[in-house]
Amino acid sequence: MTKILPIGVLLGVTAVWWLAASGSTIFPTPPEVLRGIAGLATDGTLLRHVAASLYRVTFGYGVAMLLALPLGILMGWYRTAFTAFNPLVQMLRPISPIAWIPLAILWFGVSDLSPMFLVFLASFFPMVLATTSGVQLVEREYLWAAQNFGITGFKLFTHVIIPGALPTIITGMRVGLGVAWLVVVAAEMVAINSGLGFLIIDSRNAGMRYDLVVAGMVMIGAIGLLLDLVMRRLEDLKEVRWRYARGR
Image (cartoon, rainbow, N blue to C red; front, side):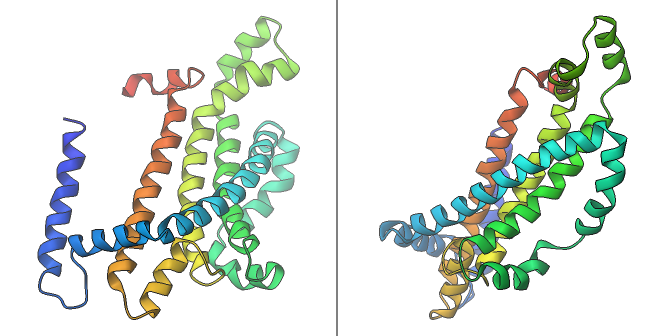
C-alpha cells in the first residue's frame, strides 16, 4: 500500500496534466515532454547538464557541511561560541541566496564558482542551525549517566553528544541539500551557461521549446526526489535508528 499510494497520486496528477494540456497549442502534454527528454538523452545534452548541476551542488554542499557541522557543534556546546557567532548567523540567514547572485558574478565571474558559492550559502545556515539545536537539545540525563561512568572530554562528544544530536543534524542536512538543489537551478538561469537551470532558459529562448522547458523541470523534480531518498537512508544508521524506531 505504501508503494501503490504515491504511484496512484503521480498517475492522477499526470492524467490531470494531460487533460489540461490537450487543448493547448503551447503547453506540452506528458508524451511530448517524454519525447523531449528522450531527445536530450540521445544526443548527450541531458547528461551534460545533469552532471554540471550535480557537480556544483556536490562541491558547494560539501564545503558547507565541512564548515557548518563543526561550527554548529561549537555553538551548541559552548555558550561563548554561541554568543559570538549567533548574531552574525541570524543576520545573514534571512538573506536569500538569490540576492547574492550579483555579488557572486562580481566576485567569481560567469564560472562554476558562482553557483557553488550560492549553494554553499543556501545549505550552510540550515546545517549550522540544526546542528546547534541538536547539541543543545541532547538530554541532560545522557550526560549525567556518561559522567557517572567517567566519560568526559572528547569521548563524551563522540559517544554521547554527537550520537544524541545526530538525528537533528541529519534533518538539517536534508533541508540544506533540498535548498541547495533549488538554488543551483536558479543560479544557473542567470550566472552560468550549463546545467538544468540553463537548459530551461535556453529552451525557452531557442524557439519557445516548452516541451524541453517542462522536461528540465521534470528532471529537476526527479533528481530532487532521488537526493532526498539518499539522505533519508542516513536515518537507517544504527547510531540514529533509536530516534526513528517508534515511527517505523
